[in-house]
Image (cartoon, rainbow, N blue to C red; front, side, top):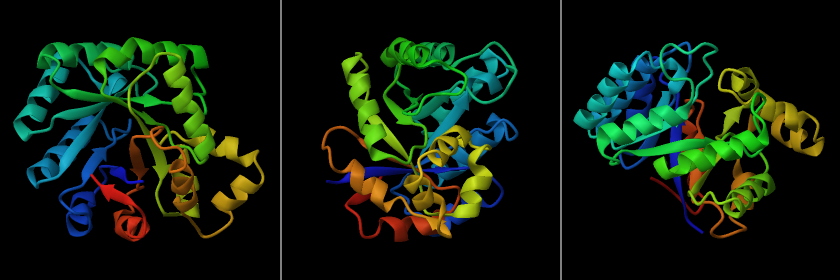
Length: 265
């Protein structure tokens, strides 16, 4: 099986130069939007990488967008830079900066502004969400799917749970392609330190109750997703691709994927 792989990066200082030095221009890059960074840094990084030849997907966190005028400006900037896809989330900001409190109205306005031409990914949660009930999560996806191009799952460390989640979406009428969110090769201490920052604290807490799984994840010096990707390959058609959370450890990506039947795309 050949999975397309996208690489998620955090728009921190120096990441553009690291990507340019280590990641092929044919790779699709996803650029996060963290509350303490803001959308400006996301867009600046995304535009710089797009101008350099990468296919780039900036994250737009609804609660970080200050106004409809700002969203219009973001859409125009994407169009000027040749960016044809975004990833729309509610975001982790506790209080909305403006009109948008969730992903749905952002998706609606993007569709209106672009005539439906801008692709938009949305988030999925195989292990649930600490603040939203499973039924509300499902209802949200059903409401958004006509405006979305695909689902990217929150980071998960269990192939069975990802397959079960994809099957649940199909049964309940969500027909969007599912990209599996997978942690890249990363030092154990860094994974734990970043867990809360990137919103996967609940996933690690879940793992901590699972004995052998958590020992496999956190027992060594470095986590590797190799066994997880192998598990995802067991059910053809369930998963469309791998969304690799790199933690900006982009130097490990070619080594990690070099022996696997995946392509950076």
